Image: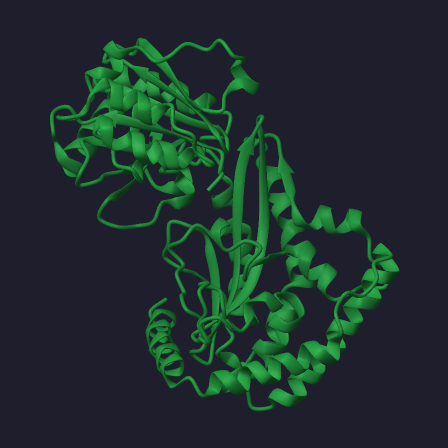
Length: 457
């Protein structure tokens, strides 16, 4: 809720369905000079999302940014290309959205503004026109009801859009569909295109990452898993995965990437390498700078941490600079992440790692008394599997005190946590949770499922 995003909906007015509509989309792209290709050589990429209860197809792209510029251009382009009405929805603030509708010729027909728009458009912005929007109204829906929903007072404008969507035949979830939410399933189609007239492959961040990091990580036992997203994974004793991955984005002509590392054990709620790593960034995946800070270096530099975390490339055509940039990132990964991953060889060392770098993954869910918790990244069931839990908790106390000394030295921040009380609470919570047989049973089921996933990578 409260996200800023932009997405495109196009009407499948011929009721072709997912397979035939995708074929038509690819054919029209071919007419424009673009042919299907693999993700690494793509110059344009789109994600089509279909819904059973809707004749509108959602189109998203990783190139769509919150300003909506490319999405608006694509809405006009697709309307003209496929000769079908298109709607571009742009959530510009948590309580304001703009919907532009384009006719089958690509001409913009009207703009609908929803939510508290005074700060953006003043007090005198026009109401939507009935003629262009009315032709989409579902049976039994009146224009008065449509306007009543449009004029509703919503804390988050997404809630209003979800109510408005079915009135014009759209799916309530599809109207907010974005590339970040895309997952491989029967309703989702990933499409990649390159210019048929260009023989040389355009270098992409994913391709450069796979090439440079493949050369550096594969000799260390990592392998590139089969996924839409670039994950290098090393499996230890069939129960622990060491992971190195990449997130990237393009904004204002600059390409940015971040390298993440982390561990996942079979005892967590979910292991899924088909997901966009952006979902896990900051949860169980940490960037290079976070690893650097996590060891509490005596010569810590905030400037150095930021430089390690994020990398910028202006021109992907300058291959030498691109590869050099990834080589620098790889060396930092070898210096700050790999040594920490190398230490994680069993449950106890996994706990030790999480205690230092991502302690939130070991949070015990007191409300539900479940080890698997409500978050996919929760690893608190490891407490049951630990061989030397008392020793590990003492180490955790030392890490807390180290961190407090670090915060005081670097940030002049006074401790807000009593390590003794905190560790005592963990001990009590674990004792309580051990009694929850159902929770243990569920965690063991997850472990078997996740074990098969790691074995089949």
